[in-house]
Structure formats: C-alpha cells, structure tokens
Image (tube, rainbow, N blue to C red; front, side, top):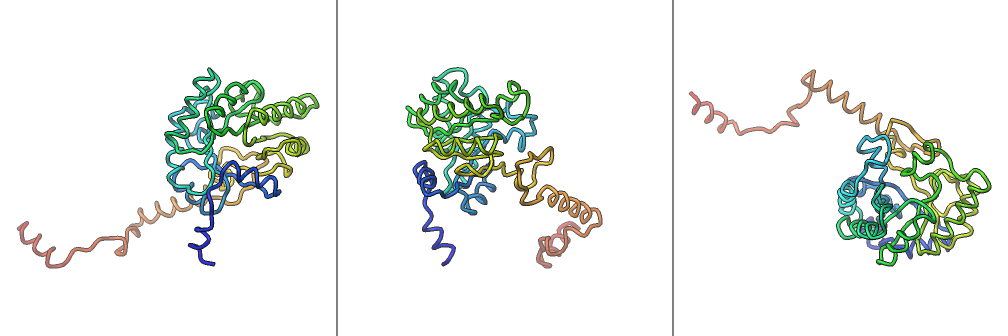
Length: 289
C-alpha cells in the first residue's frame, strides 16, 4: 500500500479514540513536542497524542524546573506544534499559576489553549484540590487530562523530583484522587513516577485511560519527553527513560565537522556556491575600470 493511501486512512485522534483504545486494550502512545519540525516527525510516526508540555521550560528554555514557564510561552509553542501535526490529539499543558489562583482564570487560560494555541485539550496537575478548576474547564466544553503522582509544578512542596505513592496511605490517596478526577469528567490521567503495581491498580479501577511515565507497563499508554527519548537533553536522564538515539552527540559531531571544514576552507565548495555568467562578470570588471 502506498504512503498516500495510508495517510488517507488515518483519522484524527480524539478523546473517544483513546477511550476505545483502552476498551480494546490497545496501548496509547504519547510524546512531547514544542516546535513545528518535531510535531511533523511525531505525527508522521503515527503517535496517538502529542503533549506540548511545560517541560519545555527545562529541555527548550533551559530553566531548572517548569515553574518559570508562562501562558505566553505555552501558547507560542502550541501554535507551532498545531501547524505541524494533523492527526495526533494535541494536549496543552497548563503552566504553573495558570489555574491555581481562581476557577475563572483557569477557564480563561484553558480556553486560550484551544482558541489561540490550536490544542484539542488541556492537562493540569493535582488531585481533589483541583476539582473546582477541572470541573469548570470541562463544563466550558474543554477536555481535561489529569496528572497525578510526581507533579513537577509542586516540586518544592514534594521536596524534589521524587517517586510518589510508596506508602499505603499515599497510594490510597492517589487512587481516591484518580477516581475523583474521573467522576469530574477528565478524559484521561497521566500517572508519573509511582510504583508499577499501584499504576496498574489505578488503571484497572478507572474507565478512562491512564498514560504512564515512570509508572510501569500496567498503564493504558506511555509518554516520554521527546528530548529524553532522542538524547537531546544532556543535563540528566530520569531512570525510567529509554534512549532511542543520541542526537545531542550527533549534533555536536556535526558542529565540530562544520567548524573544521570552515577553518580549513573546505566549506563552502564549488557545489555550494553560486556562479555568475562569464560575460556578466567581464562586463562588471569593465565597468569598474
């Protein structure tokens, strides 16, 4: 079958698609993207969902954590991703303090992701304490993905990027949060850095799909930060990441080769240069005499 025929058969992924995948026990795939070129590549690979994550603060903007990321940062990158992806479901990550201050502000900011950023849904962190905001956003007609476990926007409260849900009480609280978010109308949940058996239990108890990151194989789908997967972020690599490439190393080698070629005058060569008709060149020289 030709590539064009396959493309015609692809359909836009929606919240209903993800629910159907869970029912069919078909694992859901998700990756992050923050720019047009990456979005095109992720979409061409057939990935189900693209998260424009506030992780861009670390892997793109160079911050120590996600807290400095603003709504304008997120909308800027969402627009680029939306121009590049046609089939994947697009989810915008609501940044720190875009939904915590008030319910009205949460709804307005969530609306910006769809109206300005071209997203299909939004994601926000937190459990039962976020029910008023999540419920209001959903009531406004905006699909919401929840996020439990290690929630990076609460990194200072959690005492660092540490695994969550490791005690019986913490695990029970997380399950209760998951059920509450499902009852509120969330279409899916991200489960980050929690024990694998807890993630599987939560996934089995919920009707909505779960997407794991550092949460084991028992989730309904998996997500990774694309820069981690591709080896583009060299500051640190979480233990749950599988590196599929070393693009940072490849880029460094390419840059070194370029520098060498320029310094040795091997680049640019004739094949990289523009020629001028000889008669025009002679006419120029004559005019300059």
